[in-house]
Length: 425
Ligand code: BGC
Image (cartoon, rainbow, N blue to C red; front, side, top):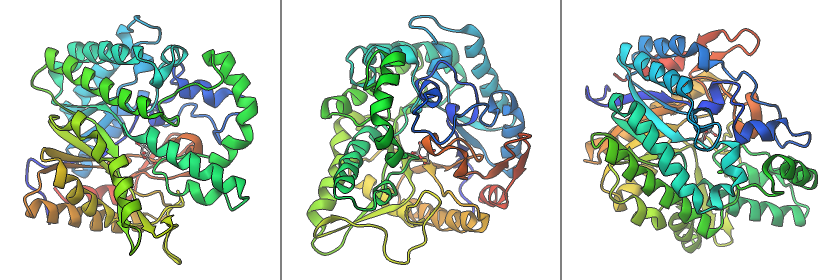
């Protein structure tokens, strides 16, 4: 069944994962360290920085009408207070290219990567980051805002707390000498915890050299409760800055949300997890124009707490459960408390078998349509990801793309799932 004419159907990417050579960013610096936790460095990534037109054209030819991508803070402001006009121009061209092909650009201001200078100042635990982020948001709105209708301020603003929880679980499991890699399979982003633990002592020295501190607070570090709220305050500051320049732009942030399910006896664990993952942010997002919903899998709780994927369940390359039904459940649950518009800003599956991606999209979109039929204001769906790309610490082995990318030649080959997604329009 097709969606209404004005429904946004598209795909998502993030600058660092696809552009290549993001040399002023904290991730780039960490990838180069001798005891890096990354399986490989991002390098040229998908060279999307140079090939964006080809990629946007492929989306349009398949029938998509939205592209969610991020502008890279480390490119725009490589040194504190110094804005790079050429890089700004680059993104102006990407936005114009979207318009040329009839694609609505949905721009994310911050998708995990930050400029090295920001991290040297204390990163995502430092008060000063709120003002720095406000200034950057204001600059983008002033320079590019007249061409935009949607801005996501911060991607997965709740990631730091999720990582804190998982790091704690991982430490406990490692201490008990249990199979440590199991804990990692529950976080919705590529992380190599085992490698991280092993490298920790060397990494401290290397971090000190680059960031001036053994424990840099990058965005994807375990957050303290204060740091968690600091991210929310940075979001509010950015929203105000964007609205002051461009009141017409719809603004919101995105959250990583698991479909949390309680088995008998697991209700209290599940409720506490939902509060942590979503509900305690409500005061900071309640007045936003939209909320970006990002879901990949489910998590179940029993009387002892979080459970591993059920015995025999199909797992994705990321080691978490294949569970496309999760999206509908999350949308319904979010709507209980958040009454504004919802845009699915990420949902997808890492697999080498594209027939599983097609099946995943079929189930996920059927769920979205049921939500819309029940009156929930879901305004768009952006699949993660437009193309196979750099899955953070896990590198290029994870294939989330609707388009395959040959790592040697950078040649693009659309997978059947791309046209399948486009057929919903
Ligand atoms: C992130 C993406 C990531 C994807 C798949 C989300 O957590 O926003 O950057 O690649 O999930 O793990």
